[in-house]
Image (tube, rainbow over all chains, first blue to last red; front, top):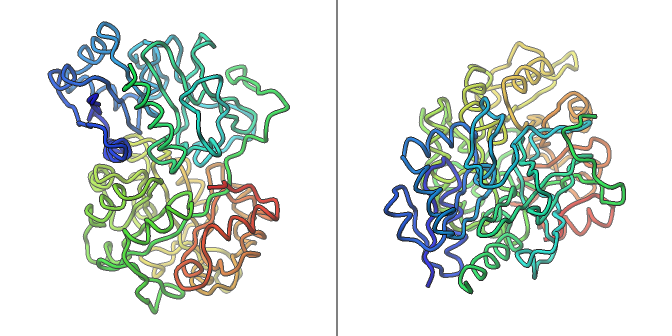
Amino acid sequence: MKKIGIVNYSLGNVGSVASALSFYGQDIRLIDSASGLADVDAIVLAGVGNFKTAVDKINALKLREAIHEQVIEKKKPVLGVCLGMQLFADSSTEGGDIPGFGWIEGKVEQIEGEDLRLPHIGWNDIVPVGSELFDGMRGRTFYFMHSYHFRPVDPSVVIATTRYHDAELVSAVKKDNIVGVQFHPEKSQGDGLRFLRNFLESINRA
Amino acid sequence: MSTNTLKAPATKTRGLPTKRIIPLFLLKGERLAKGTNFCDFTDVGDPVSQGMVFDAQGAEEIAIVDITASSENRLIPSAVINSMITKCKLPIAAGGGIKTVDDARECFHAGADKIIINTFAVLTPQLVSDMAAEFGSQSVLVSLDVKRNEKGDYRAYVCSGTREVETPLLELIEMLVDRGAGELMVTSIDREGTLSGLDLELYELLRDRVSVPLIASGGAGSYDHLVNLFKTTDCDAVALGKMLFLRDYDIVRIKSYLLGRHVTVREA
């Protein structure tokens, strides 16, 4: 069975993500070292909170290079959730002008639009763009909680969008071995579990 | 309109999140309790098993507040948050006794998705700024208990509804949102636990003035109370207590009723 390592850098939802992924009996580990990363077959970057705080924490754990190596050189599958997906970007304006991993070209910026209520909190629909990661779901409604969003330069990496008032948000991205979602599958009941199952199946097949 | 935001094609749905139904858990010791106007509590079950029930029924979120934590000068127990998080697949907001950034961090480490602060947000607003900077606004839910005075003005109360706050309510809310409160839950003390209907006037007043998501709480007792709330005030969410715990309602039927009245709720 493939081993999944959840990078334990963040404040919050690491435990929820671990418990949701364990639902399908996968081998799940919490990782906070480079050797731990080398030992798993796929990596999850979860997390809510402030972009700068997250980057600082990853740097403090001295994991930045190790994560980058596993994802870019070893081509291990990676799933980014919420802030975890935002870390794929070149940079974020949250907390200054903070560099991310730069795996997917684009910036993270505050959501803007007319009459917006920010943060964007609640259950909202996603519209998939031809990815099997969203197969087999009932409503495709997921839980969001964020004020910043990732704006990739290359539209072909977008695998789902979400409309919030008059703004169209990128709710999921995929580029080679890199998958990211802005919503919280671990908090999204049936459809969330199904998304995680689809992700696990894509890894286990490989 | 900013050029920063992609315009969506006009053919798509309205793009608004669905209205949220949030069971409100009041933790007293190890058990859940429910009272009337903040008094006269009855035992309404175990937090984890109730959490699993409402998760299965398709609640959007659960808010749990330890109602004796502040007065006993302690924090909501991490163990309760943690067992709920591992058993439930929905967002959980937790509060009770949070008075420092470290307290909040402890709740997040236990798995809370948001923290709820009430008394200490009002007494030390700097706390809201510090928490928003550390954890992001989306994880900071400020809860306010509100009562109408003899002049008919709404005033916030802290310390479980026992101490009136001098600052006018709208001014207080504006200040807390400026400092980074990402969401507001406003409870009508007069209506709480009465099942007599939500204070629509209060939420109408607030909804137009508050730029963050607003959760109405206190007084929900029938399907039509909820329809009226969402139709007249456009609140983002409603917190339910007695209606779910001590009356014959469940979230599945509530949502069917709301959908039938064209309130956009999520079909789970």
